Image (cartoon, rainbow, N blue to C red):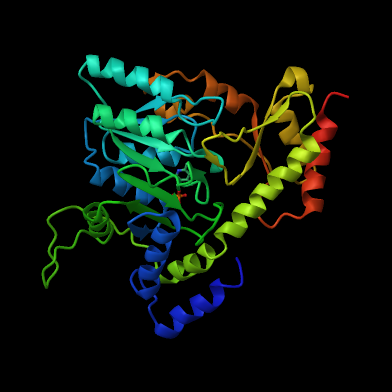
Length: 365
Ligand SMILES: *Cc1c(COP(=O)(O)O)cnc(C)c1O
C-alpha cells in the first residue's frame, strides 16, 4: 500500500457506504477508465469475474469455441468453460512470450475453410508485456472473431503507446493481491461500448430488471466490487506509475547482476511496447547454465526465497487435456526453462542482490 489508501478507506467508513455500491466505486471506475484510456469501466470482485462477464456479453455460450493463449494462468480459460464453451489453445512466440499472430492466422484460415471459426479470442498480455495486438486485432476483425483482452497481468504496460486491454471488444484487469496494484481482490472490465459495460454491470448485480420490485429475466451474478475495496483501488491507481518504475528498476538490477551468465536469458521486451516488468522472468538453459530451472528454484527455496515456474501451459493441464491446441512447443519450452524471480515493488537492492547471488552460485563455474 501507499500512503493514499487509508484516508480514502476512512472516508468510506465515515460515509457508511460499506456495500457493493457507493461513491468510491463510481470514482474508481471513472479514474481507472481515464488511466488506461478506456471509455467505460465496471468494477467487479475479481479479474476472473470480469472475464466471465466479458465473454458472456460477447455472446459466448454452450457449443461455441473460444481461442485462448496457452501460456497463461488458468483463470484466462476457466470462464470459457463456465459458459459451456470449449477453449482452443494457441502457442506463444519467442519475442513476446505471448500469442503468435502467425499461428493464429493459419488457424483462422483453416477454420474459415472448414466453416468453423471460433466465436471469440481471449488474448493474454503476460507478465507485464502486451501481445502483438495490431495484427491479431486485424485477424479477428477480418474473420468476425470477437477479441477479448486479458490484461490482468499488464496494467501499466503499453502497446504502441496505448494501454493493452483497450483494443478489443472488452478488456479485463485484476487487482488480486499479487498484481501490480491491488485491492486485495478485485477486477475491472473496460470497453468502448457503453451498452456492453452496462450489461456487464447488470449481470454483476444479480440481473435485476429496472422495475420497482425484484424481477429477474436473466440469470445474474453477485460480482460487484465492494465500495471499501474501490477506495483502496483509487489510492493504488495514484501510484501505478511508481509501481511500474519500481518493477522495471528491479528487472534492471537483476539484468545487471545476472545478464552475463551463459544459458540464462530474460523475457525479451518486444519492440511494440513498454513492458511493466510485473515479474522478472528468466529462462535457464540447463545445458549451458549447468543446472536446470528446478535446481535453481530449489536452491532459492533452501535460502527461504520463493520463486516460481513460469505458467504451465493450459494445453498441458489435466483439465484441458482433451482440448485442441495450435502449436505448443514454444510454451512448453518456456514452462520447462522459465522461472519468475521475486519481483515485489518493495524489494530493496540488498534483497535483489541476495536473490541474484543464489542464482549466480548455481551456474556452471
Ligand atoms: C490473475 C489473473 C487473472 C485472474 O484475476 P483474479 O483477479 O485473480 O481473478 C486472469 N488472467 C491472468 C493472466 C491472471 O494472471
